[in-house]
Image (tube, rainbow, N blue to C red; front, side, top):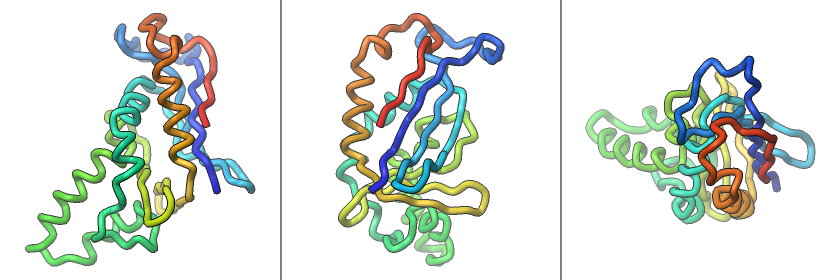
Length: 179
């Protein structure tokens, strides 16, 4: 089984095009999936890490317990099934499905955690018997079974740490790797 690895690295002074507000913690964020064969980078983004960390902490119960909606094809990666949803419904029944899909994505798609960025749609959800992370870069879909409870536990511990809870400095001073 693969695992998620979230890395935060300091943003060098030459890279600071945006001055963060006092409650932001600016860093380079890298989300990866590590399996027994390789490391797969899902995204790399300079942004406020509080957006992502707080969103995951806030939605952790839904991430761990809410299954992928029944109207999505569970045999396919979730992002792929979402992209194909419009092929399976007529216009009249699509409205109800789109509303349910939006509610699901609010708590399972990392794009909602990092609004204002151009990261790919990254869905983390519970399937029938496991957890999955799936994403699409350009026209390439990818998905892996992951140990989500271990990842969320590490992230919640980080969210309670002094490095995270102190509001100053506004820039991360050392690299952090969560897995």
